[in-house]
Image 1 (spheres, rainbow, N blue to C red):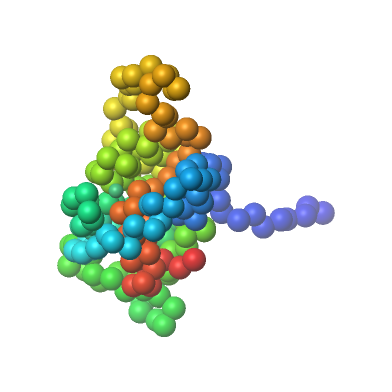
Image 2: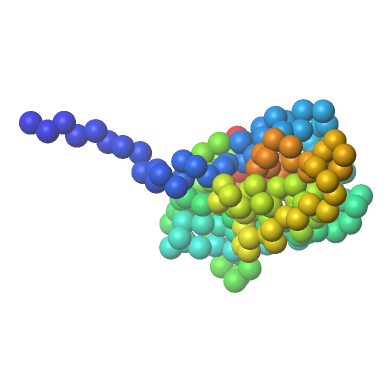
Length: 187
Ligand SMILES: [Zn+2]
């Protein structure tokens, strides 16, 4: 008699991608001497959140305008493996997408759902875009290849991301916290 074991529907690709919990832990691990990103994320204000729903692909793309001390940026997060629901019930989140339609989804988990992201700020582009791209966590175009303009440390400038962690900028930290406040994201 064959023993049937029910396996969770997680693809191999999924296992090697990053979720928001990992990315947040990575910035603690990769930059142990600064809590700047986490601390000053409170000074970033998020507005104009736009949702795009891809029910067939089980994905939701969320964009926002982020205003911080260094300028205005447009962070984007694409959540994958999102469960779309037929109706509005107490356990689902309803949002209006940019096409004018309402969609209902189960809350997205920081720990379980994989993400792809991008932010046009220097911190993200300079320190994380390449690393995130290698982890299938970069949204959209791959970043241009990095070319060091000074000699290797200690003679030249220190490495931008010495431990080569994937990660997130302060805009993304704040954006994720905001999405948790509105209920789309859960821990
Ligand atoms: Zn940013």
